Length: 155
Image (cartoon, rainbow, N blue to C red; front, side):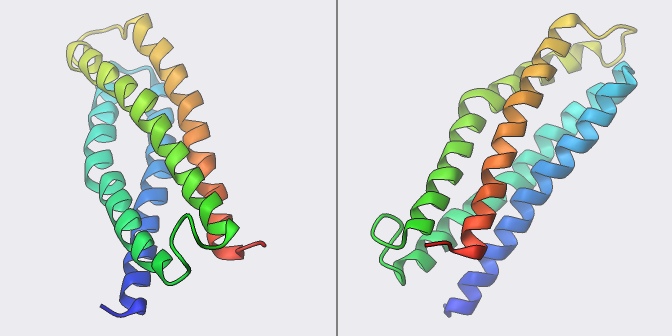
């Protein structure tokens, strides 16, 4: 494949990844603010579905195309500093997702299945939602910083 085709796949991956993590956070927070069990439960189901469909697809596209494109620059670890910083930010965000956000989302999804038809959302869901917001903010800021390094390429 041409460099331009790999670059197109990379940009598509970034759009899917960043677009989904930002939009998901917005509508999950808005759904939580309603405090309506059916609305919150529905939003929680969508968090899981869209993460699988869009965030995971974006991650795969970014990783594969990024490594191919990085080879032209000496590889992720042998290339310019901005590339290694960008990679490190992406990995740090991934670690937060794997270690905190995904387990929190799984626990919230289990709770949401139970309270979807009830009148009250348990306190545990709200505690987990606060943790999800904190870890999610950090896991979103890191790829946004990464975007800066990939576009500006500071020395």
